[in-house]
Image (cartoon, rainbow, N blue to C red; front, side):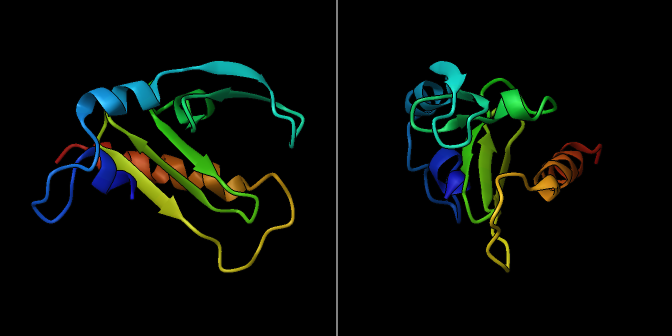
Length: 112
């Protein structure tokens, strides 16, 4: 979904215009998450993923889910990640998200 929205896939144009992606990825608010109780940074309708993962650009945006899913796009580096667990997770902390995001970033930005 993120790749199709930001860059387009299969020679189709992106679903969103660059200005719209820019607005969606801009930091909008920070503060306490009413569900999790921790401090979070939010873009418009998305989590500001560049704040969570320091190796992503400030314009990375996406969202994780209570079952353990994780997804985001980083318009600056060209990365889009979507991850769903095989088993429902009952916690709010999923350490594999950090490792998966870092591995995707390393793979996508490695010298060719």
